[in-house]
Image: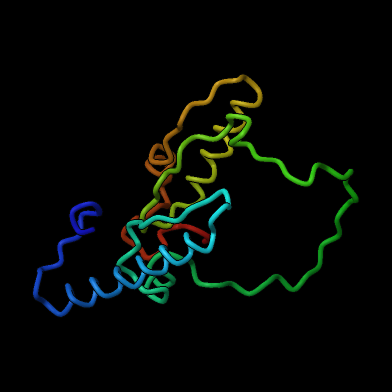
Length: 151
């Protein structure tokens, strides 16, 4: 794990042993969930977050919850669409990108939308760069917690 995901825990230290225990526990959970999902169309695997507890993952990766708006919305009735639609089956989705710990979700979701729309309109599927959007964003500060995601 340390080599695959570029971690630098020193063997024999309390942090190393703690992270190893968390990783092993998460590996058991992945194995258990994969066994329970037998016959389903998905499987789980270890990720760069496998050495984090659920609480640490929430604190380091997820944004803090925000209160729901107090005003209501009205929606127009739309015609009923199909029960399921999978753009990956249509070839309109590029491979998964990793934003890491930087709160740049807006850039990753934007390039995902643009990639899909370009494929739908022009038949061209090309992986676009979220990093280029971030470099042009004068308000982005990757050193801040959550950077500029959701603010």
